[in-house]
Picture 1 (tube, rainbow, N blue to C red):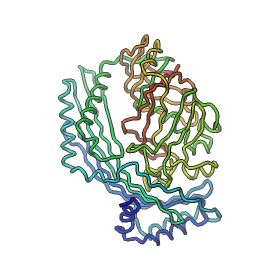
Picture 2 (picture 1 turned 180 degrees about the horizontal axis):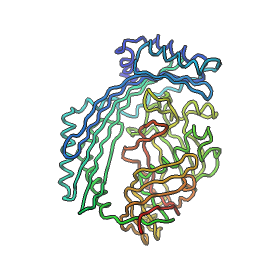
Picture 3 (picture 1 turned 90 degrees about the horizontal axis):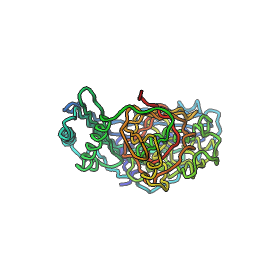
Picture 4 (picture 1 turned 180 degrees about the vertical axis):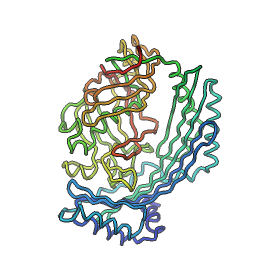
Length: 477
């Protein structure tokens, strides 16, 4: 059964509402608007958390609703409800008149269709009994505690969701998508005397639970979380000052996502609040730096068959060989900037309006072996994993804390360090990239991006990369 047919069953047959009547309501609500749509959503989500040797929490939620949007110039009206009925949609259409009244717009053409499927449409929640999930978490907990006598605490969580969406436009065109999403997380606390440290590992994507509950997957999660915790247990205070910094492959791409990616979203550039505003075609990074946003990678956490406006996702080159060549666009910002939508119009749920958001954002590989990059550094920092960070989109200034980092001394990886923070300016840091590795890697499927109070799943990635110099905030005396 196609995605349209399955979502027709969810939103019309089961709800007992007439689709032609809904289409007439949408057409009337968007009369005079430049763009807009009715976004229908049905979502099931489940999460289990095992902590302190027992199942500490479990939840199962079902939500459905609609969001109706009208766009007129730079203004947008949005109304939403959990009541999926003709009356609720009619009431919502009345609230949009404040935006469309007196506006003589011509409704934009619908996005192109696609028959592409990037992930299964099976519902992961029903494919594995709840009791089996709880039993698995207890097994992971026990296995982690057996690994090492220094293990003091284990936290394991398993979550999944199944989201079905359908998008209706004023001309009667429709698009639909069915999106699974699962994630497994393992955190381990180790201790030696009065000192305790933590390590964690997560993995997931747009597939059923079979992958993350495979013993090979969760055993690796335990190994990696324990390895990080023990590394941190033996760490020393990080140095401070300007120095060469080597970023590891994969998850360190979260710094690229935050410090660079948000500044390349269309709305910030249209409003000229991005550090990259007005720089199209200019050099903004070192030669060899190519950054892309790609929502078309099969089964990835950040991928989407279509975005939340119905536009098929694509591979968008943002920076090519150091030059700014593209922005990530939703429909409204693309129209106002005279550009093309790139399939980056995303929203957290039916209760939120769409805006330009990243999908899977990463830097392409370069010519250097990772070992060559490390050997080139006399004294510096090797940052492998990151925790939290803060970024100012307008200035590009960032601060990121490294959850796993090492000293580099005489071209060799040395002592693990604790408390290292990387401080800099995103656009400036791109111009200080000196070497790019040949080992590009995507993260393991754990990213969630926040913007204007909305969270959406994303992916990040990069190869090993040398930035020289970068300011390191440390704790060493």
